[in-house]
Length: 337
Ligand code: NDP
Image 1: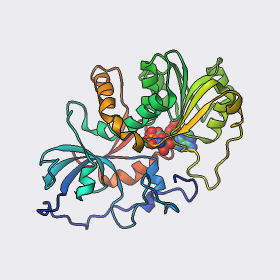
Image 2 (image 1 turned 30 degrees about the vertical axis):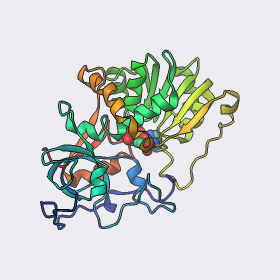
Image 3 (image 1 turned 60 degrees about the horizontal axis):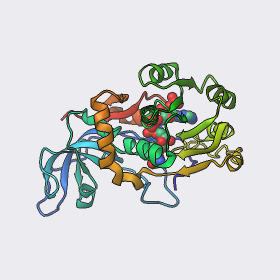
């Protein structure tokens, strides 16, 4: 399970080394492929993978000390012995944090071939990758939004949050977000079209702030942070509201979670809270692409990215998302084609 506790990961827990050699061809008969890694995705769940899981699951696997960490990324096929891919193809999926990755048959099988290259390839770590599916499934499948509803999103300038807010605007909802700096608040209001945004580090009475932003209450809460914010939201929910439990970034670094005291409010208000993991919604990917690609091309959806250049800047990029250093999707650029 994705649990809390344990020391927060630090940059010094990661090491960049240059003594691992890979032959730049795939052994014949192996059915594998060789990938040149271009863009790597920094995701909050990766911090959990730096701990040893008591109950490993297919969703979360601990990293192996001494080996390149594994995560989602975009790459170019350099050599292939796999029937699905050929040299020169662009793909996204699970790869290694290294310049080149030799992937086994099963690892290659799980990759997605990139058919649309008229949009930035780095988007396949975010809006066109698992981040996008998370926002899409979490908002449309879990929250069942209706036009005109009142929607609140936490970590709103992050990779997932910025999309949920924009999807909600496209649906005709009233959208409020919270973020941790003035720069983020301004971007969400002025560039991404949120109706209202507050800085949760300055407006620390969450309950009162939410009552001000939602005088009629909240229909949908897309929760990326958990903790005190979730508690304050429960007080402000409307009858028959929905809460998508996507992530609890404020909780995962704590040895002891703060606890949610207002859960009892969900009973009388008939509020539905549902946790979800994007892995269960990968089948929606083709439908999601049909929805999102035209919106990107027509400029109806804007995607904020924070690019860190070079593998040597990977550790600080990955650790930085815990303290909110990223503005938008945090990506590590390993190479350009
Ligand atoms: P982000 O790009 O949003 O980066 C994390 C952001 O969280 C930071 O930029 C920071 O922004 C904010 N943050 C950090 N610490 C705190 C805190 N203590 N309290 C409040 N906000 C904090 O990450 P993602 O968009 O990729 O992920 C968002 C959430 O979604 C995470 O909880 C993640 O675990 C979850 N997730 C869940 C998935 C699923 O399948 N259920 C899949 C993918 C992600 P700020 O400056 O605003 O504080």
